[in-house]
Image 1 (cartoon, rainbow, N blue to C red):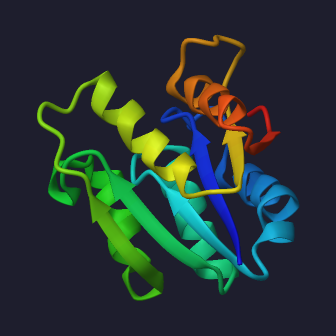
Image 2 (image 1 turned 60 degrees about the horizontal axis):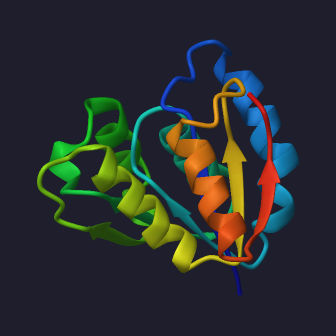
Length: 149
């Protein structure tokens, strides 16, 4: 079974949902046949990709959060609740405090369990969590697919 981490910006309002559906159909669907996806359970790309994968594929889905699910923003909790019956697992890593280091640790946890990382970055800033996750995947010798949004 292929294992895939999805990483992307928490900012996704600059495109409409149909745009993301087209991106996911083009760049997630080809890997979804026999796959287990790891998603970060945050707002933005995490929530959009989770909803799309739950609705459009039969792939295994795991949501990993740095602290607890209850600490995630409402949009993210809603996406998880909507996909509840499709989730293989929810992983609560129990970080305290929820700071940048906790989110980076969550992303590394997902990458460590994946053979492929698909990133949906916004802009070119290499300081974002998305780019840090893609860089970590590269350091670990993981395949990466970068889909600018």
